[in-house]
Length: 387
Image 1 (cartoon, rainbow, N blue to C red):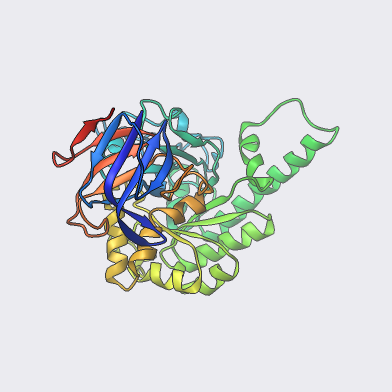
Image 2 (cartoon, helix red, strand yellow; image 1 turned 90 degrees about the vertical axis):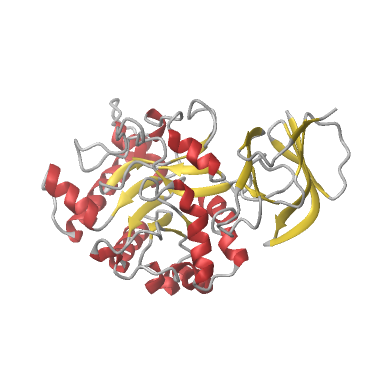
C-alpha cells in the first residue's frame, strides 16, 4: 500500500518544516519534499499537523507481562544466570500494552527479560505491529541484559542465597563470563566438545563483541562496576536506567558509553533513586553522552515516553535534543539508525502524526504508520482514497 501525508510539518535536524509531503510505499519512505505528484492508495490531508519518526523506547518488557490476565513471563528464577532466555518465545503481541504503545506513537522497542537476575537474558528489537513478534522483528539478539544493585541482590537472597553483596554480584558475573571465554576458545580448538551448552551459546555474540552488554544500574558505583567488567572482558556496553549517571557524566563521555535513561517519572521509592533528577538528560548530553529515554514498561505506562521528554525540557534540555532522545538517539544506541529514527528516503515507513508539537503534552497522537500499516486514532484525520 502507498500512503502520502499532504501539507504536513516534518522534523529535520531538530527543526519543523511546514507544507511538506511524505510518501510511503511498500513500507518504506520513498519521497520527502514540498512537491510530490504521484498516484497513491491513501491520502492523508494533514493541515500543518506535526509528523515525526515513530517513537522508539530503547528498554521495555512489552508483551512479556500480560495486562489482562496478570501473567508475568519476564523472569525465570531457577538460576541466577539465564542468558539463554529469548523474549520472542514469550512475547504476547495481542496484549493491550502493544496497542497502548501504538496509540502513544511508539513504533519500535527493545524488549528485555526483567532485570531481577545478574544475567537475565537476550534483548530483542521489534516493531509494535503484527500478530506475531516475528512479523516486526528487526534484531533478535541485540544484547545481553545484566543487572547490578539491589534488585539482583534481593532476588538471589530469595531464590538461592548465592550472593548477598554487590561484590558477590560482580564476582559471579565475572565467573560466568570467564566460562564463556573458555567455551569460545574450546569451540575454536580441536578440543571442542560435541555437547553444546545453551547458556554459553547465548553468550557467544557478547564475547565476540557482536552485541553489547546492557547493564541495568542505578547508582554510580554500580555503573562503574559494569564499566570495569566490560573493559576487563572487552565488551561493548550500554547503561540502562542510569539514575546516577549524571554524577559520572565525564567518565561516560570519555569512554563513549551511551545511557538509556529512566524511568524518570517514578518517585524516590528506594535509596538507589535518591539522586534522581529530571536534569540528568541535560547534564549527560552537555557532557557529550548519547542519551535515550525509556519508560521501562511496565515500570511506567508506555504512554509516558513523550512526557519524560517534555519534563526534560522543563528542566533545561532544548526541544531538539529532547526529541532526539526518543527518536534518532535510541535508534543509534540500538544500532538500527540506518532504518528508523528519521524521516528520510529509504528509511522504514514509521511515522507518527500529532495534532500539535509532539512535546506539548496537550497534543494528540492522531495517526501512526508502521512499515506502511496505517493506524488512525482521531476522527479529525480524514483518509481519502487515491487514484
